Image (cartoon, rainbow, N blue to C red; front, top):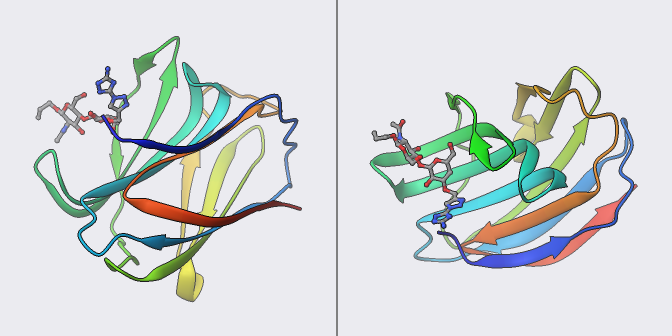
Length: 136
Ligand SMILES: C=CCO[C@@H]1O[C@H](CO)[C@@H](O[C@@H]2O[C@H](CO)[C@H](O)[C@H](OCc3cn(-c4n[nH]c(N)n4)nn3)[C@H]2O)[C@H](O)[C@H]1NC(C)=O
């Protein structure tokens, strides 16, 4: 399992809000993840950047979680992260999809399988040290 760096709950994140995370990826990072949803058991997005983990190399794996059960994974085609570097991610969602904007304009979209209209939970885990989290 990934070490939890930060978990915020009792939020009321609305469609259109942007969650901006700035952090530094560890020099020997294997994996880091962002989780957004109702709580740790019900996630509209688990965004897992794997440098080298679970058989994946430099691959973003996205998934959802419903009542603690993982959904079906999607492996993205971009991997705009480097070990030891600063990174900035902006997560926002609506009832249809979740969007993650990364550095240099890279962007991925993932279906909002739970159809959540608000999110109360946001967590960051793995080999990243979070410098700031902004909701605006
Ligand atoms: C090929 C073998 C079977 O498939 C593999 O099955 C693994 C286990 O489900 C998949 O890894 C999980 O993928 C999840 C997203 O779909 C998460 O990234 C999960 O790591 C986050 C995590 C671990 N844990 C955790 N570990 N131990 C406990 N108690 N909790 N909780 N959350 C990973 O452990 C992994 O991504 C998946 N790989 C493929 C290629 O499908």
